[in-house]
Length: 149
Image 1 (tube, rainbow, N blue to C red):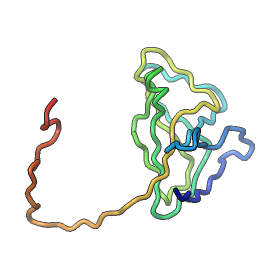
Image 2 (cartoon, one colour):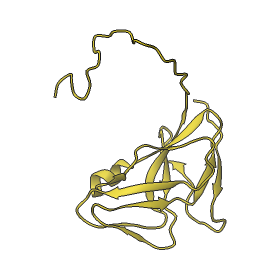
Image 3 (cartoon, rainbow, N blue to C red):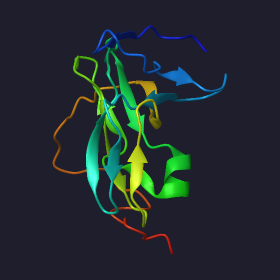
Image 4 (cartoon, rainbow, N blue to C red):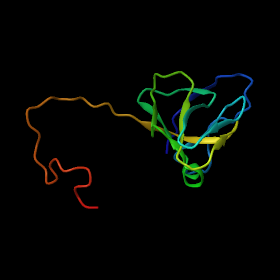
């Protein structure tokens, strides 16, 4: 596997929040950390934008996918409202994570807490060609559970 170089900037130069990191040698995603001046309380059913304190410069032809952490989802019902979130190669603003609480208790987000994962992936842009008809397939237009339960 050949690594791709991604430039990263701390939004606040005095920050001590950890930078994203792969937790194992085979991890697909890097953990993202909340950067907060004070704890945030996410009530059941509520959503909020949680800052990470970082911005990135991805190379052309790449995106960063921001994904939920499975442990937060299983233990507390905390996930991302737009999943995956997409960071485009030309975006230079702070990465924020939209968390939602599907659990039954308030959830406290603290500074330095791991709140999401970031996966850097190649992008292919499609060239759309308008046609009058599409080729036939066995599946056809069947969707939304057409193959069974």
